[in-house]
Image (cartoon, rainbow, N blue to C red; front, top):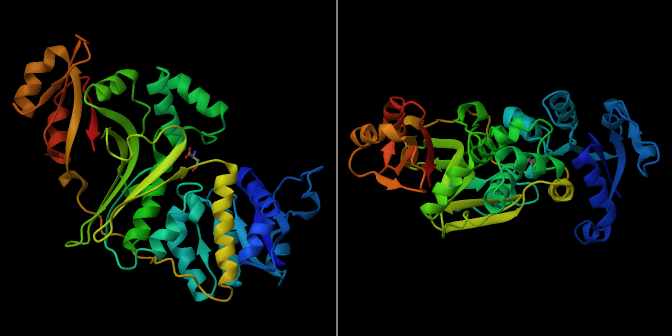
Length: 402
Ligand code: HSE
């Protein structure tokens, strides 16, 4: 048996133990010796749990045990997860994690430490829950230049938008249902203000470009200001509102544009029909064209399954570093204000003429029978131009068109 440890025995951590126990026979097809969870590190005890006898409270018990070859870090947050992961990697123990906050902040640093110590730092579960996306990005696209990655990367907000659309719920009621179902983060702000998908698109952008994109470099908007009328307007123009992470990489300049924001996605686009808690990620390679990865983006067992897939790969590559292509080098970000995009806009009805003056005769009015406001879509315009014009309107609201 290959011995491993789980540090942080919350939802995902306990899911890892469950996946390993339940699917030991499947794991043995790849690793005939099997995997055994020797230790569980947590500040809590778990009396009555089948894992109670494996719980330790001191990381050194794990780090000083030469039998441990992989640690699953499912603590969340930066510290002590960073220190524990760094110390493990320095001892040649591979670390597999779902901790997107740490991966985004210090993944490049930990990847370099892993390389220096012939072990691996893998984080498949940090993006898209159970969807295999990071492994295909590093193993199936060596021959490709990836020009864009566009994804629905947050299950909670996709669930909220779906409920608002299909059951005509208000934002608050849909959020409550997401929380009752255990989808939302402890602090729902991370989901609804877009910080969670922002971290995920930053991780994807880092892997695609090999440079470190920090989420602080990514313009970020969530869905807390989206209301039912926005969804009705979207429907009127054959679109649906989705919270997207968008990364575009320009081959000529090597510049990257990354953004998290709600977009109106047209019917017929593969992301249009992604509903409920599901995630989907569209990758465009310059040779292969469009590919879509779809599945459970959140939840205990799908996320745990992705961590275990990394554990298996680490064990298969024991004593070697799995190069994830992440260099600890700051990304060259493009000018977000120069990006061209069309917008959907709502302004109070009395500003309709002003809107025509500011945005030109090519705007297309959109009506859902609300007389108090004037709604329209713009032709493509730079982000900078749009920002300069829209700030002249009181009470305006806008959503980008994909
Ligand atoms: N709160 C996250 C989501 C969990 O809803 O997608 C998975 O990262």
